[in-house]
Each structure stands twice: as C-alpha cells, then as structure tokens.
Amino acid sequence: MVQFGVNIFPTDKSINPLVVAQEAEARGFESIWFPEHSHIPTSRVTPWGGNPKAPPLPEEYWRTYDQFVALGMAAAVTKTIKVGTGITLVAQRDAIWMAKEVASVDALSGGRLLFGIGYGWNREELAHHGVSYRDRRAVLREKILAMKEIWTNDEAEFHGTHVDFSPIWSWPKPATKPHPPIILGGSAGPKTMADIVEFCDGFMPISGRYDIAEQITQIRRMAEDAGRDPASIEFGQFGTPAKPEIVEQMIEVGLSRVVFSLPSAGDDKVLPLLDRYAELAGRYA
Image 1: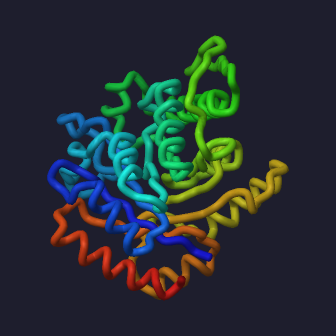
Image 2 (image 1 turned 120 degrees about the vertical axis):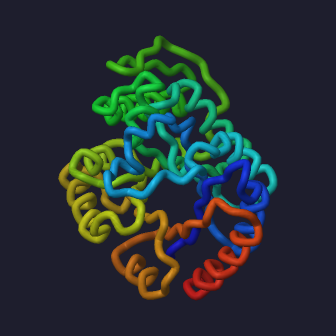
C-alpha cells in the first residue's frame, strides 16, 4: 500500500514546524519531511539545483531551521507520524556528530526517523564546509558507512580517505534496528544507483526530473547483479503533483511513498493545501 507524506521548508517566516507536523498527523499523513541548508553563500555563483536556466533561489533556502532540532521538536509534539530529513546534506556534516543526531531523534521519537540523504548541489556551500564538489559523493559514502559502524557497534572504528577514527563509544543507539532507513534523494545516474544498491534502503528523487519507472527498473536490475534482494529497496518521490492520474501512475510504477510539497508560507496557505492533499490521499487508504 502506498504511504503519503508532505515536505516543507520550515523557516522563521513560515508556519511553525511543530504546528504543521501536528496538523499533518491529524490528517493521517504517514510522514513529514524537512530539508536543510546550513546557509547560502551570497555570491550565488551556483544556480538553483545547478541548473543555469533555473529561476532565482527562494529565500527559504537560507532561512531554514536546523533540521534535526526542528524534527526532534516535531516528534515531541506528535505520536505516530514519521519525521524525515528531506534531505540531509551529509557531505557537509561531521560523521560522528551526525550519527549522534540521527540516533538521538530516532531514539527519542520511538523509531520514527526516516534518514533522507543527498550529495549537495551548491558548490560554494560545500566549499565553506571544506568539501570540494568533485569529492562530495565519496565523502557522503564514507560518512554513511562510518555512521553505520557507530550505530551498530558498541565499539566502532572507521578508516577511510575522508573519515578516519580509532575505536570510539557513542550512544544512544537508534531505536530502529539496525538503523533508520537511509533513503537517497537526487537524480539517479549510474553512480547514484551504485550507491543506492551498496548502502541505502531506498530512493526518493524529486518529481519530473527523470523517468522514475526506468530508474526503478535499472536499480532493481543492479541490485540483482550485486546479489541484493531488489525488494529490500523502497521507492518514493518528493514533490509529486497532487493529481489523481499522476498519483495512480506513480503507484503503478512501484512507488511505496508519495510526498506532496507544501509552500514555505503561513497557516492560511499551508492548512487549506494540507486539507486538499489529505482528501486526495484518502482515496487510496
């Protein structure tokens, strides 16, 4: 059965993230997702999403609340809705601290965290964190592998090119075993697909950028070739248009999660849209 969620940039000018989480739960949504950017360099050299034809970047990109703080607070005022990072810019974060943040939110929420991850598209933002654009994939991979070691071992160590630490103790461990689902966002070319098969539990791209049916077919084929059960990889989509014919098409191609986008706006705009999305999702309950 398909699950429905919503995503929103929670900012100091939008609906309170605690309120939108409560309202989404009250309407029966399975999950709520918050994206992140630590900051946006004012140079604005890298266009939105790396697309030279993209419009100017909306201000919510540099006004987001800290992702794990907002999700932790949202989890504290809800009971059943899953809280998702949509997505975490893994390459820009310290692996050991990030492992603790993920584990803390998952443990305190009773296992309700969905860990969405991405490589990052803003070259200047990456550079401010000491990461080159060309290395971001390799950095993400090592940080995910290192965090898995921390989450699943009482004494963890990791030795790589970008992440290196001797044996450590780190608690809490996640409530979800062995760890929260790791769901990669972004556009799935061959390198991304290889990462999904190697160390992820799911794939959730943004709607409209590629033929998702073909991507699902390729990822499943690559999983089989690697000796992995294709059924162990779940598929979803961010920003699915709220139209019955599109939702039905996404279900048909194999999506298990559809996430509708909410504007970074006030209650007066967000809540009526939540009602409309809930009505559409209710058709597939």
